[in-house]
Image (cartoon, rainbow, N blue to C red; front, side, top):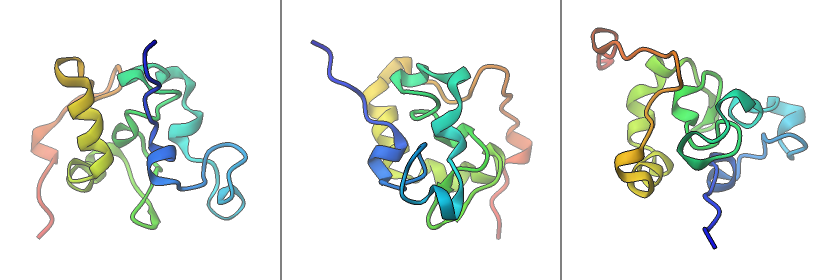
Length: 108
């Protein structure tokens, strides 16, 4: 039997999944309701590709789009966990998203 893979809201215990304890204050996390990307990296909704979803809640604040989140997400323990678990089948971007290296500049 295959072990269930952990989603970001389970790992971070943010309480922003539908019905969660922080929904009233911060709203539902778009990663937890994004059913179009369900199954990416083996997760429910976008729970294992949260770095590619705008509006997730990380570090105590709501984050911007995937380009703005790039550096913080690449250092996130959950991102590293998913990348390690997925190995060669790791998906970085949602279908249709583009990687634009020129827009990923370090903020100094």
